[in-house]
Length: 446
Image (cartoon, one colour):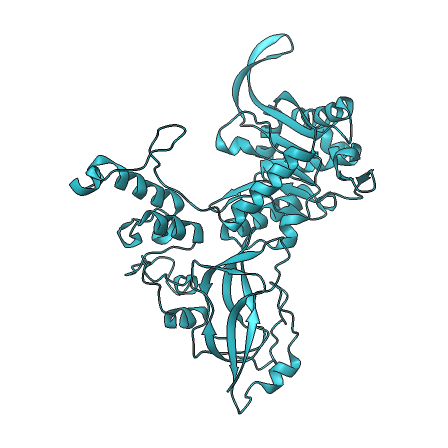
């Protein structure tokens, strides 16, 4: 039986390696052209890798939780003498990059092995209990409790944290949906194990090396994931290249809250606050396009976009990601709301595409959801500005010469001083603030 080895392709995100989250096939499984064989974690999301070959799985190059370098063997496929899949090989697209496999059709005749079957056949690594495939969770009745002999873990970061800290996931009670073990659950287990009550006499007496600079003992060390490496590089580049400045303003958002409530009905919840905010931001960028572009340093030109792809900062278990609403300037408040909800769900599940995570032209950061008032955010390079919205809370405010309790928030704009001066930045910020304070009038002009 001849074999063909599939090398991990360049995933187009500037990475040199990717972590194997889950094998979707096992040695001996039959695969078709473009059938997914593994889930890998890149800098931005968890994606499926399709096979460019059809045949029988002969070898898996790597273990779940391990990393594979780009250009190195990922999987070896054997070609049986009967060439059962000759027709599929001839019809295959050959597109091996993530998300660009040949679409399945009703007449394709391809047999795609279910994830649950493939995963069940895979051999778990000795240092970690086997994981329950996500597909198996979907077979349960929503009303029925999920009882599994193995821990429910989806995030590779959570698995790695547990492995590095030698936490037995079978002893961890998951606080997520259906008993899913989250990062916080593992962190609490680590803290409990590090406390005096969680250590036996031998562990308490074992010497622990102290840091030479501070004299403090190290609690743990955690290798940077590919995601964190790229985030660190992007933020460092932003700080190094962009001469940024920050301006902010307190805003009376009472009318905005009232507008949001007025749009609710018994059958329609209406667009959310973030969607309304996004609509005002997009309008402001159309009025002040200097903040919706980038700096072409090679040609020494300031570039402005004809349209807005609005990035939305979202915190996930894997870290901060910034997916973008493509062509946000063409959407209504309801359209923005639907797209924001879709991107948020995809971010939570780690299913955002590389395009969604890299096409933004301006970023809106609702850090108020964390219960904070303000932040001097870092611009998402190569963008030139980011607008932050703080929490909306009751505060005393002077209205028509009298003290009143109003819904106040703070807007902060961080901008690249190379593309504009303070007057332009202040004009944009004031435009958005005015829209918050008089949303009815703003919508009439949009």
